[in-house]
Image (cartoon, rainbow, N blue to C red; front, side, top):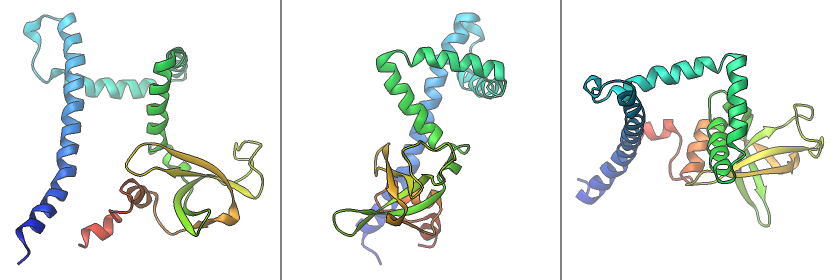
Length: 201
């Protein structure tokens, strides 16, 4: 029989991601409830308000907003508003960082991670996992990327962000690994393997 401490830590490791996920969802729901609930009470009588109504109203609001963004006219207005927002120095840094990071991992843009690769790290014989973002000259690539170079995004572990490097193709090795498994490996500094391996344990 395994020591109780090993069983405890195994259960702890399994439950921590669930707790943090639920906490994040409840925090998001609470924030939406506070914002939209107050707007509802400002427009309508307080007696009409029911706890949770803000979250309920938030779902169709997000859907309608996404649908409106499909319209070229509304999209143009949104882009103009966004341009005004990013003129504010501090707000610009926060907003653009969150926006760009969200877009980077969205389903629409995840395809821009063309291939998982190992990048040679010098000095020494180390290698770092990255994602090719520009591989062909002519696919809207900057002029400073030559025919024998590619752009590779190198994410950080345990934090948001990363570096983009322009590197010779000879210093990059393609590996047979999905983008999702590579992101999971990098985010946990290699502590957690791919989903298939975890299920088989």
